[in-house]
Image (cartoon, rainbow, N blue to C red; front, side, top):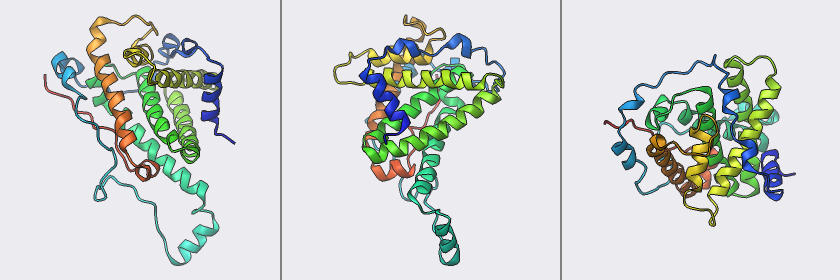
Amino acid sequence: MMPRWSRTLGYLYRHNKSVDLYVLPCRRISRVAAVEVPPASNASAISEESLNKMFRSKPSSLALPPESPLRIEEPTYEGLRHFFLKMMLFYSKQSKSIRQANVIYRRVVSQVDKPVIYDVFKMEKTFRTNFSMLVVHMWLCLRRLKAEGKEGIELGQYVYEIYNHDLETRVSKAGVNLLLSKWMRELEKVFYGNIVAFDTAMLPEAKQDDLQNAIWKNVFAEDGSSKLDVSALPAVLAFTRYVRRECTCLSLTDKEAMFSGNFLFTPMENPKP
């Protein structure tokens, strides 16, 4: 059976569901004010000139080199320990997929929870912006995994389930204890709507500014407005270049690195003004 996330997307595409139905309900989500997030260090220090120079380098694979200390290898055991773990299905396909999915999701969280990414794109780190970043990077991973066919889609389902569990924890920490299931259903709609918007903007027939508009509306705009704020244009353009570049970099990342989670998104640097 096709995994849930892929099946839901298939339904949305077949029935041509309007993306506007799923635009992030910013005003409601902004009420989650109890979330504790580190303040941006000094986002205003990044000049427009610096932003315009970022994410223009040639894309390359995001796979970690074999000697990298950041690599996470599948554990190996021998003797009785190996025997008992095998009896406990530690080496089963499902167990291995869950371990792989955990590593992949850790790569996502590592990128979106760093304050520097909000500094670079001149965003205040709030629950809404953190959630938006999380969705974008989940989309990047699921899109790449889907390119590997059924095996990648199945692994993507495990990543999606880990994401859902983590998101529920984040919402609870943000102060939402009542009607939690309602919030999760609403955020699920947002997740799928954003993915449809980004996927549609990456189609060959899409207009050049479709991705830019989708990013503005779903990541930057506090009220979901489609009218771009001119003052935010340099940051939106930089983030659009970043997303396009990461898509290409991930496509150049081999299957083994993707499935094992031994890759890193492009590190963020806070350029000097």
